[in-house]
Length: 382
Ligand SMILES: Nc1ncnc2c1ncn2[C@@H]1O[C@H](COP(=O)(O)OP(=O)(O)OP(=O)(O)O)[C@@H](O)[C@H]1O
Image: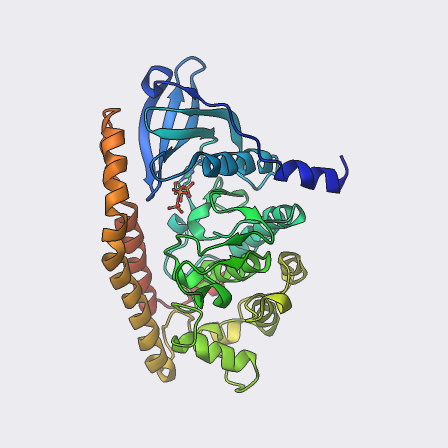
């Protein structure tokens, strides 16, 4: 099939015919893997075939049918790619949920693997290469993922030789007018989206995914994001911007462990103007270069560490992560109502809610704070 036809096919979202089934007669529910604000991820065994699969159950009261159709359509059509989660031709409704089946990722998502101080350079490059492949595939079909973050990258091998992108709930065709996605991960948002007022509509661009790829690589290498928010009220972001615009030659402290080649790549991915930002494929050009500078990584860690002169800046970064934790606490009430409805629904199946996604996220961030005290011995081993 020619590219153009392929592209048209993927945008032709069909209404999915959904039979209503009783989940517990067909599936044996083994565990709740995660619970977001809108969906629950269940590990189940299909009774008839004895196959282990994952069901994503999206609450009907919180998601319109056409939104479910879009997520399922894209998830299913994109899953032919080796670095995109496989989704099966199984979709149905239960009492109050839209459900579809997908393959099980035994090692969970990447946020569980990226520990304080980050992953080794080798692992980060493996992740980069596979992510670029998945995102380039999406972009070749003129689709924008819009929610690239560690939680949406599933791990199939502990040495990162196989990772897969998931969650196409926010995916739309390039150029679609949208409002800001209900994403709590402010550090991953590009500046053009950060600066929008609530409910302001904007035109979706592929370049927002490229920004998020840059942030993901930074978090994988260091264990924490470069700033809390890409706007001028954030001093870490301001320092970066001043350096990027050549108003200072001082490399921002969180970028000091990197080589000039990596800095060149990340500067272009984190370009403020979306139209000037580099494409995902450009990352490939840098995969053979060294990313961590052995000389500087020992002296200063992007997450703090030994450099006394940077302690003031590090303190402000710590504060910004603390602020983020505070915001998480503060936002909990926003999702409470939807969560309660979800709980009510799930209790209909005799399921109790045991995983609190927000509490888990908060724990991860609290733990990331510890990286301020970590040295970067791991860099030596690359
Ligand atoms: N197939 C899978 N195998 C193992 N774990 C999974 C799978 N799918 C999802 N998960 C886990 O569930 C989490 C949430 O999944 P997903 O992003 O699809 O749900 P969501 O409700 O759209 O999330 P969000 O809160 O971002 O809207 C993932 O971050 C991952 O930890």
